[in-house]
Image (cartoon, rainbow, N blue to C red; front, side, top):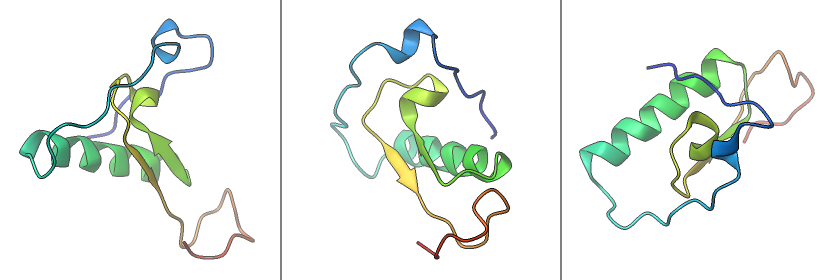
Length: 75
């Protein structure tokens, strides 16, 4: 699911994100899936969970071919 990305100045971005306590859960996998969908939809190269309003220390990144970064090497 594509999520709304918060913009600079949103107070939800000011809080400290919590550490992930449980790995391998359906909830964490759903979050990662939503982050991937959102990042791909926006032609992004990385996304942190707080950027979509989830205060967890989760970050994804990667790029193969991206129109926003045409000279970037695959990661």
